[in-house]
Image (tube, rainbow, N blue to C red; front, side):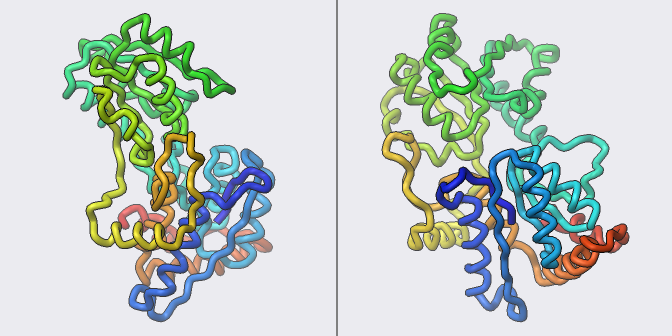
Length: 332
């Protein structure tokens, strides 16, 4: 796995989940009775695509079966090119815009497709019978993720106003003030859950957490927010999540994560919950893909890893059979 981190910073949630998954699987001998998983983790600086490429080559020279991460687009694309060339699965657990030519034959993403999320949000807007909607996005990728909604005014009786959160600052109060003045009560926020926590605190200070307001958040990590301060405010908040905590197996894993206290508690003023696997959906998906890989997939991955190890020094074209694992993994 290749994980991005701030220099001298603590281990991130995704790397923790990655290590936790491997150790959990190895302790349960019924899952892979004849196999012991090992991992190699490398840290790189944010947005350093050159370093990401170097780390990927280093790992492939070890004969790794697959590469997880990194998350940010420039670094991820660099690693993806190498994995495509050598026929090794590149597994991601964060959102990535997929191009239509589908050249990434060995790319596997567990994150929901943006068009599915966009349609789900549009369905919500129609269900609530909203006629006017404000979309607030953090960066330009939000416009890609929400394109089904953005195209909606041409097909439905819907008025759409699009706003962007201020760059290089966490102060959203000027933007919120404009929205309050414009009586924009139905708002869709496309931003990280950390940013969402800050926005809610500022909205509370602005008097925008009343029964007149309804906020939809596109992040799949809304469940990680501490919403107790807003319980009796009357505000409506809607979000999505793919972690089913009512499933007994999921609940058991979450309990183990909590007991081992692998994750440092959030800062008191962060607006985030303390405890179990609430840091982000990407960390949960990282655990999930390792947990779901069956015996035959592990064997195929090992085969690909050995061929890639040879290919680092002697490049080769992947054979058609090498594509089996990438075709199989999305179905897990």
